[in-house]
Length: 364
Image 1: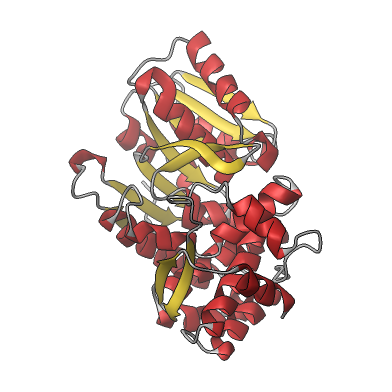
Image 2 (image 1 turned 180 degrees about the vertical axis):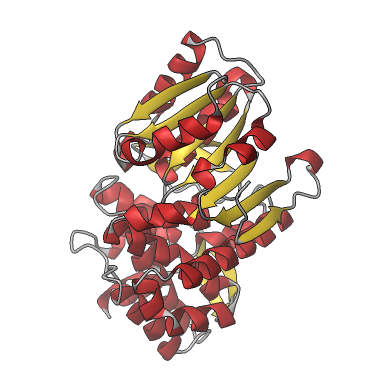
């Protein structure tokens, strides 16, 4: 069994046996001993896409062992595949191969594959286990941890889904070496989010490590991923189903989901939309006197250094944003909820952001 660089536990105190490990290291996709420990002799439904599968599927298949029943499902790549018809393809393969409740679904890919596979597992035979093998930075630090699964709908992002925690998350750092620059940068938006909402020291450390991150330094990347996962695990442990605290993880996401919906899923990567949304939220926070303009500018400069967008699409006005956000799942009693910063490292939920504040955040 390969030695992890980091290993941490997502503790779910009210859930007992649904607590699970996050393992971060090298060579985890080839670690047959670890898969045997996690799976026993369970059959597997292995889901990936046509970009990731040629790179890693054979390695995972080999690690799963020759004697195990494995059903492969290869979907087209892209955010536009995150829909019910794709989940149905997974269910069809699983049903045709006579999978059962002890079968385990495995997600090999980025956030779309992770969300799809997790949702499919949550629904198949009223719920089977699944394992996350995230291969993008964004999936490693965000979507693979916490049990949010689901698909998009033409009227809103992630509107159809379920909370379904994985059995384990195995983060193989080697997969980041094949990740395109645009995808890598999109993941960094979610990384610095954790500094904004939870840990000012982490925020400042990321800014100081900008060059090392750009070079994909193994040590710095491993530390950034570990700290991001640890923060998310802490938040999820306190609020598994987003009854309150967990909503702060949506910093920038209310604006981001509106961008994705209006522009068309996949035109902007999720992390790109989050980058823009965080800057808008930070500007509103600064205008309200909660953080300094310098802090908002530091955030924007960090994102720009990785060629991430910090200005909304020219096609979108403040009114267009409001119309798109009105259908977001974070709307409560008809009011749109936003995550703003009370200070660097501390976030809050508000429902009183005005169209004038949105327009000002877009104009600067």
